[in-house]
Length: 258
Image (tube, rainbow, N blue to C red; front, side, top):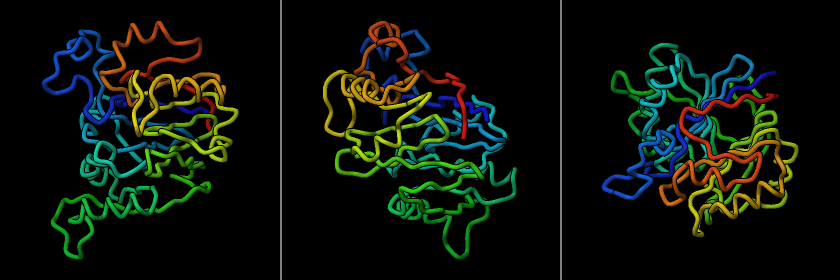
């Protein structure tokens, strides 16, 4: 089964360029240095899946030409990953059904708090219709597609990555336990966060991300959740080993699905 993955956004929580920043990256004319908040669209087996729904979702969906969406996989509840959930109502209107959100119970509790108006008994007309599906660390199905959750640690906060077929998407990770790393063996494509050059308390820097890639040995690896502190796309790309690339917004990758 063929899988198509489109990077809707590859930036960190501030995006790139950063507001009020005049660094070389933020002033770059290279479109690959313009990064919306991190998210990917996955098309597999006739299903349309979205990983994370951040503040740029409307812009991302329009640019990507998204006409349908079957389910959303949430990695965690930080606002750069969930603050676009209200935009899902557009798909409610077209598809005439609630949107399924998969995520940790804690993450879905946060969604219920943030979007409280979508869960009240007497709803204002036009609010998003959401169906919350809590998941753990066992395989579940999203729109009929088998998905393997991979727990990573974002400092002290458990965050979910997801493996679909031979493709895995990991964001906001600082550590991955040995048992969870076993779920990432034999990958065709690994997407993993690489925030910047200097170490960070809750994200892999580039050196740490490269070490994970070397250990897991996927056929191809792509870095995402990138800040302006990593450097210009063209310069960083030249420093990476074979088989490792910086992702950029709009990049499409094809691989084997489940």
